[in-house]
Image (tube, rainbow, N blue to C red; front, side, top):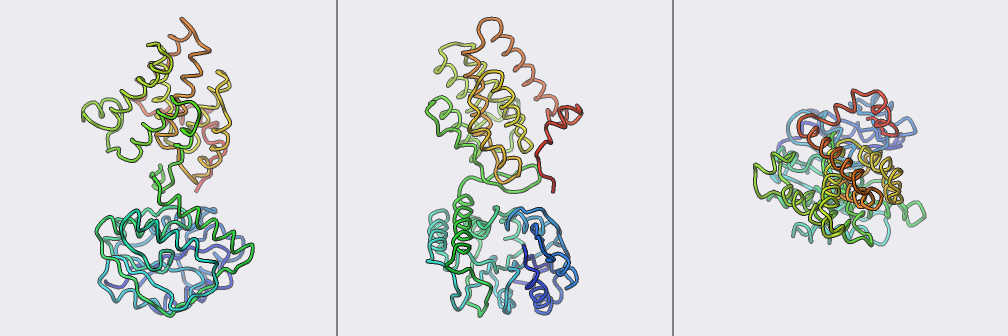
Length: 404
């Protein structure tokens, strides 16, 4: 593997160590650009990193995986080196191997807990890719240009290394782990240490589940399927159909594209969701309103919080359940996770099913006509663009959404 063109360092509140880390990396790899992604530090990390000669990417607090993803966009083409902000040791041996992904294994264990998070990560990598990892959580890694293309954008948070290993193994890339005399500031067996490892374990679990790429190109866990964990079997069935589309969908978008391609997961939803509505309501009008409402919320789910806000407005009028939507809204708005088709379709189905008991006769057919009109409009125009052009809707749409 050739020397990296850039070294990426995600840092948060590392004012005391970042200067030494940057200096060491610049000394070890003089031709590489050191890029520090300041992940919402509350101390002087950013200023110290810049003074040390690093290129700085400033971010609100997004987590390690997203910080590295944003830093990678600033890096020149070629191989990469990833390093922790508190690292002490020589990483040059990582570039001496011809593997696509080379991972550093600490020669001597330092601090840490009881190995629960590490063992869970190791087992999950094996279950998801058949690769047996020795050091699943190591942040010191060298990626070839090919591995960079296959692994970025990274999974969010502390699960980024685990998913990186899984993606590399699934892509058939060569992975090598080498033991190096490195050290870093390890967490202890105290309350702060256990809290850190708890977050790490949660991030690892989410990273191994279904992921989607949002409008910013960030990779996020798809969490909308939790709406299917309900007593209502119809909502569960719709969420399951959406999850199938999340996991196995192709590039097709819109009714015409799916119908033109034939057997796609979109066609499965096109047939399956109205059928679920028909079974649940035993009426043609009920099937139509469930199918159209599910599609409409799905069309809106192109920006954080948009589909959930539309659902809450509709739920207020139809007295639909709001508890789950209120709980999910902060995670969606802050881009910690995504609804995906499973979530947006399930929300639409919940609105549709609630409307069946509230709207009868002419009022239900008016609702069907309105939803059909919005669906056709969405096939011809971007609903997002129309929202952006309306000042009131734009203000509501952006309310609570974080900006990068």
